[in-house]
Length: 177
Ligand SMILES: *[C@@H]1O[C@H](CO)[C@@H](O)[C@H](O)[C@H]1NC(C)=O
Ligand SMILES: *[C@@H]1O[C@H](CO)[C@@H](O)[C@H](O)[C@H]1NC(C)=O
Ligand SMILES: *[C@@H]1O[C@H](CO)[C@@H](O)[C@H](O)[C@H]1NC(C)=O
Ligand SMILES: *[C@@H]1O[C@H](CO)[C@@H](O)[C@H](O)[C@H]1NC(C)=O
Image (cartoon, rainbow, N blue to C red; front, side):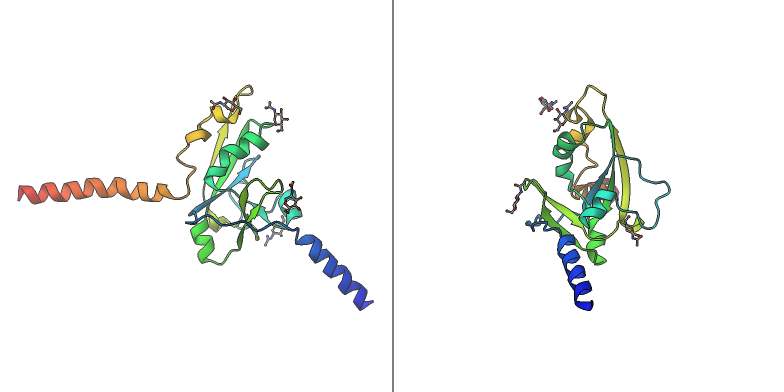
């Protein structure tokens, strides 16, 4: 009996380890990852977000990098005219020990980040939505060059806009003394 139960548990484990094939992580790693949603995220966000049925079946949460967004929505999201995305703090997730594996998609065409845990509110930095007109493709929308979709450069950009005037003001005051 015990042996039978162990065997069933072992087989289930093997089935659950669904054989996603390891890929090479990008170098450098991005600071942000994104989750694409076809419904508005719950408001307010719960502390722990439930997984979609598909994610629960796969055993991980499907995430993407900024550069995956346009090809992904063009290929898989032409049936819907509005999509949402959560921006996740991958830097914080790494520091706090959350497991993200870089694995091949089922079609073996793209390596995606897979989160082996639920998304929590603490990971979520921000969210955004885009809509397209019914006859339009996603590549006719601002998704094409939205600066919100980035690996990390927004942080640096944000700092630079402060630093440049500050340096200028310091220099100007100095010259006038
Ligand atoms: C994570 O998501 C799954 C699937 O929605 C859910 O069953 C589980 O309770 C969640 N975990 C936590 C800690 O909320
Ligand atoms: C949407 O994508 C599916 C699957 O790739 C394709 O068969 C279909 O023709 C596409 N529809 C439009 C309107 O582009
Ligand atoms: C992807 O690659 C794996 C391992 O090489 C293979 O078993 C699987 O059939 C491939 N899937 C597709 C859709 O080509
Ligand atoms: C959008 O993608 C379609 C299908 O790949 C292509 O025919 C069209 O030229 C693209 N439009 C733009 C504005 O890039």
